[in-house]
Length: 245
Image (cartoon, rainbow, N blue to C red; front, side):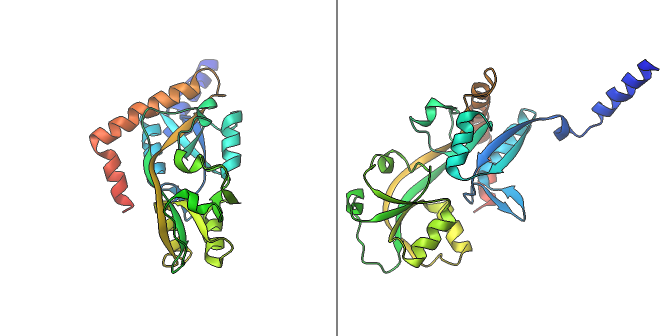
């Protein structure tokens, strides 16, 4: 009798769907379309597709948590989630996150103003008298981040940034151009803003918590680095990018 029960249990496990058996990797993120966003309640986007493909290769299942940026960073630092994306790799973040050797996407960071505004910006020093809309906890790359004296209006997300810029509560905003353009178009603001200054073009990464048990975080970073390189070499990344153009 005991032997029969063991056989039945073994067969039940064998016939379970693969994703039931797969180890879940929980990622903190926020909606940054077209890299990561929700459509009809489901996660989609360039980075989401890439992460799912890599997880599938390693017998893992990706799970995504939509969190305010600061809270997401805090959860990674504490080990409450496994990883986070899309992230700039900064010196501060390398203190509590492992980063893969390869980036996941590239983004241009720009200063936006209302279309028709008479504001002229030829360097970030021209912003000394302006309040700049940012997203709390975001890094905008080393060039902007080093200007710590700038006055900032911190928002929870890019939608809030778009709304307060449109209403004139702030006159300038620093944004990643492609994601912000996607969001402002959804809000009907796509023809309301213009680029006043290009700050930089930088790579985004996936980061993994150093607080995970054993060497899990380091191991995940190494796996993702190898897999991202392979996806580029095989043209898989380009196929995914083409879906969102």
